[in-house]
Every structure is written in structure tokens, then in C-alpha cells.
Length: 118
Image (cartoon, rainbow, N blue to C red):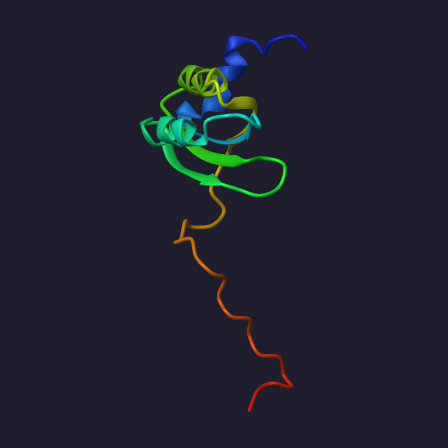
């Protein structure tokens, strides 16, 4: 696949809307023999990582990154990929927030159905 032209890359970064940070969700698969403590310390020590979570499913970790530019995103993803514990990284560029961020925790209780209401 051919690389995208530079002009396209600038438009994706959204600098025309105030130049806010470029946000990315990175899904990380670690090696079975990877040093998880060292990897977690590397994530925690990066100023680009807003939050990072150990997760279930295909990815072992999910990290929410905020960078100044797509060039900075590339550099941060390269840094994550080069960690000895990492087997694979996939990333999704976040375009716009649909809901407000909230605290992580248990889901709120379900609303009672008509038959459960007093």
C-alpha cells in the first residue's frame, strides 16, 4: 500500500479546528515471555499515554495516547513497538468524542422493567 500524501496527513490531524491533540487508541499484544512490569512502567512513564489498561480479548493492553501531531504519534507507536515485551501493536486514530469521559468502574444498575416497578 502506498503511503498517503503529506497534504492528506495534515488534514487528518485536524489542525484547522484549533490544533488540538491527535488521540489514538493503541492495542498491544505482548510476548508470552515478555516482562509485563517493565512494559507497564514504560507506558506509565510516557507523557503521551493518557491512560493504559490491561485488557481481555485479542489485545493484552489498550493505551489511550495524545500527541501533538501525526509525526509524534508515529514516534510514540514506534517506541511502543520496539519494547522487548511487545509482539504487535495496532492503533486507531480517534476522530471526535461522542460521549464525555467518565470514571471507570462497575456499570450502573439496570433500570427496572415495568414488571419490577412498585
